[in-house]
Image (cartoon, rainbow, N blue to C red; front, side, top):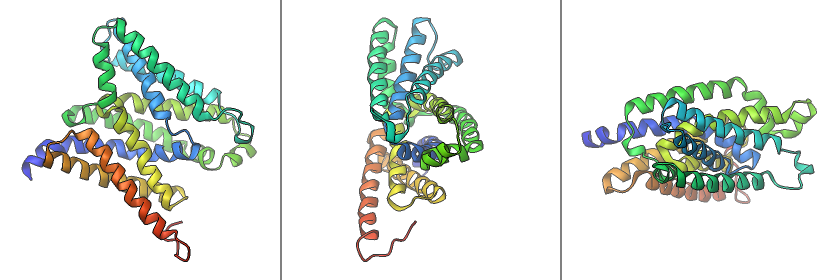
Length: 282
């Protein structure tokens, strides 16, 4: 047990920081039907970090993070500018998200071909290195996430209304494109600092799977967040424990555990919502 704690306590702390914010942001992502927005923003961040190498800037330096945040801010601008009302959409928003992802990925590969250590950076973006995270990195991530979380919390009424009840926001005359930009820009900051630690696959999992589990059982914001956080904590802890016990790659195993938890939640949801059964959570 002492060996488990010494090896996995810092990665577990990092997972809890990621779950705390991403389980909440995932609710917005599912409600807005932009499932792959974090992959797209992550690739924009990778493009920014890789571009920094061309100028001799280390990707994880303060200036390197500025390059990455600038790129994700551009992505936020694209997503907010291309948003239209659901009944007027000729092209789904998810198509725009996918196009940004593909173009950013291709551009990052082209830049990496000319940048020193660019190919290694692209690989790190995919898999991350959460098993080797240290306490200083966890602290830095927590500070960034607290700042982003405070910003999201201060504007939660606007963001949740737009995500869950878009028609109400339109009736109130809100500038949805502006609020979308603020949402995605702050989202991009969180992605920029999370991806080098956890990698794209794990960040996507933290963002989407707990929220999907929550939507199987609830619709109100409080219940959605509670279920999402609980699912994230349990799956992360189980994944880290199994990784230690069987000496398996930590990030991919956590992703697989989340998949198993989702399947289990789906089966429970079918039972709860079966005809003649009382719905337990609303």
